[in-house]
Amino acid sequence: MTHDGIRAGIPASGWLLAAVSAASFGLSGAVGRGVMDAGWSAAAAVTIRVLLGAAVLIPVAVLQLRGRWHLVRRNLPLMAVYGAVPVAGCQFAYFTAVGHVPVGVAILIEFTSPVAVVGWLWLRRGERPTRLTILGAVLGLVGLLLVIDLAGGTTSLVGVVWSLVAMVGGAFYFVLSSRDVDGLPGTALAAGGLLVGGLLLLGAGLTGLVPLTASVTPVTYAGFTVGWWIPITVLGLVTAAAAYGCGIAATRRLGARLASFVAMSEVLAALVFAGLLLGQAPAPVQIVGGLLIVAGVVTVRRGEPVVA
Image (tube, rainbow, N blue to C red):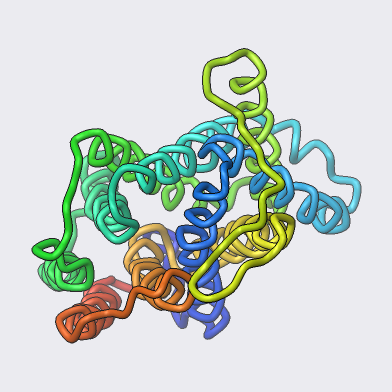
């Protein structure tokens, strides 16, 4: 039996997959900012990212389905919602927010989504959080505040609003990813969601709802310049295909609540990549924040009742 998708004796693969997913997602902000600085619009960067991710995952999903296409037909509504909200909506909102506020501030606001997940599971399913879960949430959020070091940055109302939209999309991501329905492989959900999300963004761009602007200008990062196709490939293969594929697999092993807190490590990954690609070094207070995030994750894990 399970509780919120959490099984007795969580395999180590769940933690490993969650770490890979968080690191892959964390890379997107720094890589995407460089692409947008080179002339790409947020919508164009997200569209090519998710469509490339879908192209990578679709063959894998076809192999894992083994002809069970009824699973796809039965779960088309789930794929549609997944593609529209956690993929297209969340990622477009995040990339847009990064254009108005520092990457760290956008991630901080987006990663209040674990609190939303806890609240949703409490109100919708009656899964009242334990005291340890609440304590873990507080530790994690305080850690995030220290990691972002808000006192040293500036914010804008537009960026905050888009970050809040991304937060809602993030909460949807964890809740929907944890659903192991009808034996649908996680790669099939990821591939279908990425394809739907990419097509929605492409349609919005072609109809003029969002600007689709691309560029072949070389992309410049801290101390080096690369051809435009290199970061675009990384966005598709690593920050989309690997991030979503591993993320769904991890969430099905850990459960929506725990996976959402483990994913807070994406903030740490984003800071590391921002330092490497954008020349932004973390301050000592941010290191302390990272330790608090780890403490929060451990506390949440201990607060989760495990049913054999």
